Amino acid sequence: QVQLVESGGGLVQAGGSLRLACAASGRTFSRYAMGWFRQAPGKEREFVAAITWSGVSTLYADSVKGRFTISRDSAKNTLSLQMNKLKPEDTAVYHCAAASSGLATATMEAYSDWGQGTQVTVSS
Image (cartoon, rainbow, N blue to C red; front, top):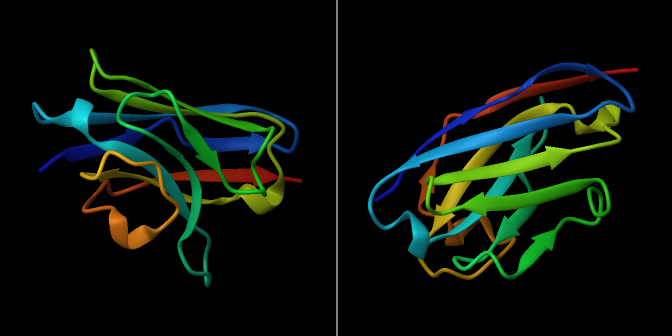
């Protein structure tokens, strides 16, 4: 099991940037694939980005491709999401999640451990 705590959310103007962080506890963090998901008010939770256990491969939703970058530092047990060129439609609570398969996937059911989330608000 992995415990996850997100940070770095906030209020930013459209076109701005934010960097989210996810601190993980647990000795097996390096074996897990990690993902970011988001949930806007009144909408279902959706996939944003994922990274394999090795950090070699990444996967992005079409809506964020070219603007967001996911990365991990397994030595520090941290996951990051660099978000550039933010849009009002990026406003949501962002959650990090861990998948024991080690494979980057957009499938929510593959992730067994979730953080509480951090709020990102993009003003127009």
